[in-house]
Amino acid sequence: MGRYAELGLQQSQRALSRGALVPLATERVSLPGLEPFVLRRLLSPTPKHLRSAGPKPNPFLPWDRDLEVERLGSTHLVLLNKYPVQEGHLLLITQQWKPQAGWLERGDWEALAAIDQDSPGLWFFNSCAAAGASQPHRHLQLLPREPGSASCPLQPWIEAQLAGSASPWPWRYRISRRRAHGSGQAAAELEQLYRQHLRELDLGDQQHDPAPRRPYNLLLDQHWMLTVERVQEHWAGFSINALGFAGYLLITERSESAWLQQQGPWALLQAVAAAPDGRA
Image 1 (cartoon, rainbow, N blue to C red):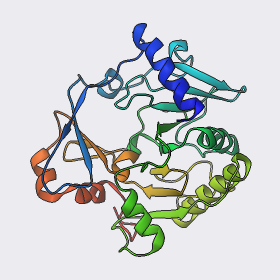
Image 2 (cartoon, rainbow, N blue to C red):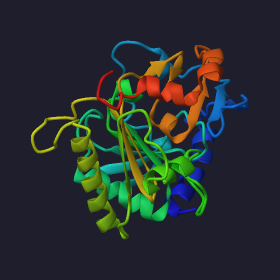
Image 3 (cartoon, helix red, strand yellow):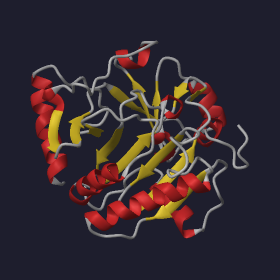
């Protein structure tokens, strides 16, 4: 495990002792026929930032120093997720205000690539509330992984998409293999793939549009990048962010588990993603 991942675990222990970290208690749920999706049931009360309506205070300006892992110069910061399901869940945030719904910029990709080079894992980004973002301040998220382990439950399905050996998924998406090595080359490649995906999905062009036109999720590990266009955040009582398209689902008191078992998780993802022809 890399340096940033180790620092995150060490800071997690300090933050726990000071009451700054509030891990969410969950349990693994086994529902026949829903493999390979990983389902967990939330046992803790729903976090306040997910329950409250209306304007919310920005938790990143200023950020909680007990959650700080490391500053990356004067532009970015590695922070612990205050409400993690997985221990060591990291956030990459901008130190100054940047909108979550705006374009990701070169500096974001440079910071991500530097961390990814050291501490690989599953990165994800929710472009706005309709794509599952809980905060409007720019933040990318990392679930660190041990070297050689699969980044997510749908890894084999993603690899089949990359190889062209599987039928296309029934929603609007773009997927590309990463090939660059070294943080500088990786940052440039990631930025190029990001812009390419959003142009091909007709979500906008950074040179002509002030911000992406519609919601989307972004997922990537050291081998691939996936972008999914979204139309809504929830369906059948399930809140879906980018992790749904990696194979992780969270059951809460509002979730219709019977619907999920009858229709299946692929139907759940199809309900919240844009249709292949662009229609909602």
